[in-house]
Length: 109
Image (cartoon, rainbow, N blue to C red; front, side):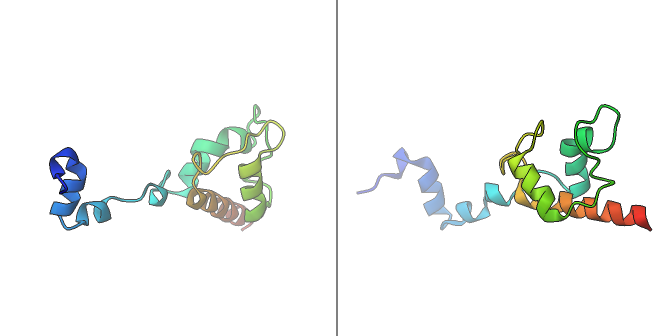
């Protein structure tokens, strides 16, 4: 017969009817950054805002589409490293692209 004293976590799950696992958020559903703007500032801005010491193109001034931004973020190019999903989650990367599109649109108006 099963003795729950040897597996306290399983005993907790059984005692709560399995709800303990359902209430735990999935790691892949957690957000790394609250917005695309904050993600851009924390990850991209040092190299991509036209600063004198920048090593990459100014993403706030160029019209790169979202697919291009995602491609170079995931694969890197020249001095730019590739950013894996564990470094920048897909949702944050999409929001970075949306933030850049909005920033460029505001600059044109």
